[in-house]
Length: 321
Ligand code: MTE
Figure 1 (cartoon, rainbow, N blue to C red):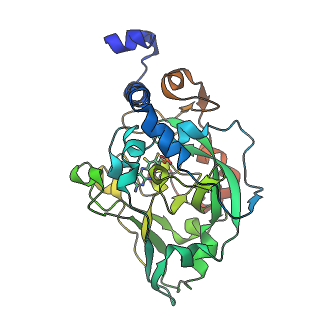
Figure 2 (cartoon, rainbow, N blue to C red):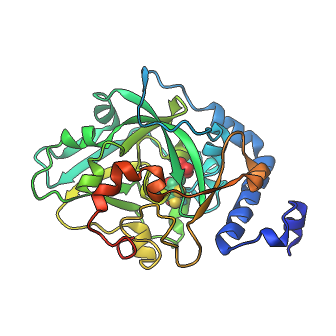
Figure 3 (spheres, rainbow, N blue to C red):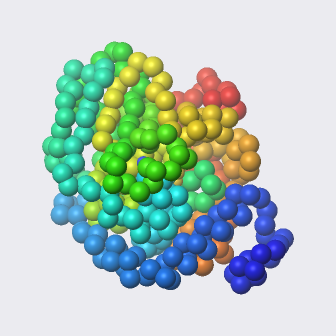
């Protein structure tokens, strides 16, 4: 048992698996970073601007207790800004979001390069409270602000060959994490076209009624609530309609651990840990307090099985994980 565990009051019996171990370690690091660099965290927090648009509530929201905005914006995975949970907020200013443009290409009738303003303008903003279930077995409940991805994609008129949608994050060389070889950059993700067009799939440009902070994927990110968090790609610069299944970053890095589909499924374990439960970072949980947040049962498709189960009815989910 390590000294820091004793300090944090962690009993050996609590150390159940590698995922939990790693999670506690990163939580402690995040808590320590928050303590040491509290001013930076506070600045990043204060810098978030309220959205100017009216925000409509959505029927798709869960009524579970929200994760605090502070936790959701200081405990992040955004490897381009560093691999520790506290790195993205510390390095947030290394992501330059103005100006920002998006390339839309591939199998569609209206491809082009668009400014972020062109992309956002026609869309009314909704608030959708979704669970974000990370593959590392923690979860948050976040009020995202955005609009259905389908409404955006339809504007570019995908043709009959568009079977998939591929997404790419910026690989601006000012991002400090790009020096690491942990992933092959740019970060890439993909969805089957029916998943991309599903009404639950959203594009977020805000959270908690504020503009989305850089560490959470400014100026535009995907949110796919029934899939593990790594599918929800941040800071998108390119969307391509493709005929073939596109390569995706985590699948390229470790194909036997991270499948293309990545649907949340408590019955399909990660090869190195179970996915049956998750640690819910809810309420005012932040820093060290997060260590003691409750474990809850993970739900099939992250609780959205009724809505999306039909997309996979003819598939063996242990094979297509
Ligand atoms: N997108 C990019 N470009 N780079 C990343 O490292 N991490 C993913 C996903 N999107 C990631 C990314 C993972 S593993 C998770 S769990 C979520 O972002 C975390 O989103 P959050 O930090 O807003 O909670």
